[in-house]
Image 1 (cartoon, rainbow, N blue to C red):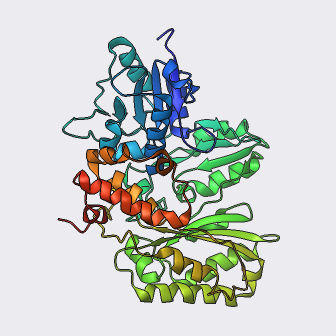
Image 2: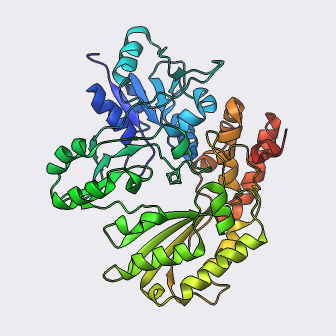
Image 3: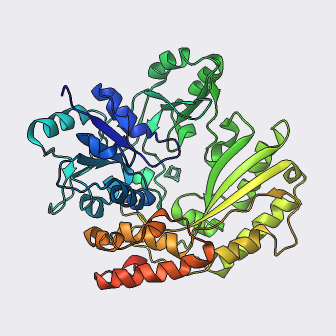
Amino acid sequence: MGGLTLGKLCFGKDGLQFGLELCLARAGLTAHTVTEETAAGCDILLVSICWYRDVYALERFMRAAKLRKDTRKPYILAGGMQATITPEAIARMVDAVFIGDGDDCLGELVQQISDTGDCQHPNVFHDGDNEVPAPRVCAPSAHTITTNDTKGTQRIEIARGCKYKCSFCALGHLKPYAEVSLDDLIPVMRGLKGKRCSFFAPERVSHSQWPEIHRAIKQHGCRDLAMDARLDHLQEVQGASVAFGLEGMSEKLRRSIGKPFSDDMIIERLGEFVRTRKRIARAVMYFIGDLPGEDASDWEAVWALFERINAEPWSRTMAATPALFPLTPKRCTALKDAHIHIFRDYGTKWHDLLTNHGKQWGFRITRTLVNGPMERTMDMLIERGGADAYDVIRCLPDKVLAGKLPVKEREGIARQILQTAERYGITQGQLEGTDG
Ligand code: SF4
């Protein structure tokens, strides 16, 4: 592979994607981050596609960099979670899509491309292939990468997949659950004393050795910055900030998706977390709108929950950031066929709740925006539009691909995208799950 120039392209904040860095490290390869000006100069471009927005960002990047598939200038190989779930549209943009975990085979793929100009691995999907291969599964290992932010955080994967398998969550369904053992983590911790660390997994505190890992993190003087936990395990978080998913507005909806948390349990666990922090406790709470069966009673339930939090004395030392994500069902999950309502106005409902109809709550609250019809249409186009979705994507202007449009314009953009989609045989009903 001597003389071969490898480029890498990620669309995250710091241009670094754990999975791709892990694959490169395992293969003993180095890839250079490309720009629109330099991308055409590499022989192979590795692209990480982790969520739907990356597909639109890739189209925008390829236009600006004047890259086209099938030219081999460069050979473009995509991978990542979104590429694994919805490879059809992506395969129309790039030369090949890798399906699943590439930890142990990136070297082989690069060698094959170098030798033959193509890649015919059993876990690779090309435009026009009849079947998407099953995702490759690799065991996680105690690999560490350092993020590019100013202070640099060490990220260490401690488990892959999730044993809970909540019905909406791709992380629980895409791959089997597997853990890195404490014995493998200890040598890594030894080298991390005093450093900023994030020992991460889809649901890290459910690791079967979490109490021991938690103790070892402290003993080795690591500063664990990760703040996510299931409601059942909030006390496992070291710092004053926690992020957890409640998902359903009501206990009924939470039960339906695999998170059977009652309001009493939420008050008890959140109260315990807040009371045991030194000063202000920060709580990021995720909710999902448009879950199957949602009706007015579920919104009454979430209002009642906020009233109960408001009545608790401990809430005066809490800064809450509730965030609402209307459902965009993922193919690999139990909710894959769920019926959604792209134009249901969640933004107004959410604004009313967070502002208490303009009267304000007694606890601090950060207002968050809600993904609206444009974001949901773009997400579902990738998820349910199949290969034809690319016919729509390539018609979209750069400003829509970038997604940063004034909120008041977005509903109109969603309707325009749907009109374009109709021309290519993709209906609104197909994206909402009501056709067929
Ligand atoms: S939502 Fe959390 S607990 Fe549920 S499957 Fe996903 S990662 Fe696991």
